[in-house]
Length: 256
Image (cartoon, rainbow, N blue to C red; front, side):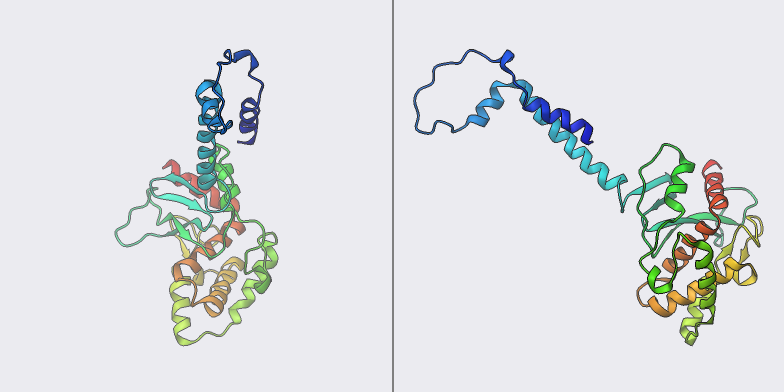
């Protein structure tokens, strides 16, 4: 908006001598400058109109910043698919009686709340590019220094998360861990949309990392984050480990 507003501001301070009306005699007053601004606006329709336009542009600019700029922006892809700074997208097993968007699939892409927060990049007009910009994480999450992980080094993070499988949980924490990991699917390695595999039945490195990650969050932040948020954070990392298949699956469901 800066490039638009600067010319507007310039126009407001331009010399309008060509449009001046003959000055009318005015009675002497001790409040010589009282009401000068009001008088100027009434006598100069161009300036008055430009101020109205400027105020409107500032209002629109503020609205756009809140809706699509920076952190906190939200992007709606369809009636039931959206993402934002703390929401990602991932296939989940079908609930009882739930129908897939694609015939024969036994999982469906859903929005999931996350623990980490990503800045949302404004739309490019290309859905694939927007998903790459906003669903595939970059940088270091707030817990990165504590866990020793970064989205910018997915292989090292994968190995560190896998080591977290050694964390000892209490009986209640173990039940919670079981609820999370026994509903989390490995969609692109050991399974398929037609036959999704639960990560506890998958031997790939990513599934071990996800299981360890779930333990780490339950042990260290289990009182602050819900099962769904921990599940969503696992999904955030899966998008990083499988960027191409993640974007492809979302687009497929959008086109179904």
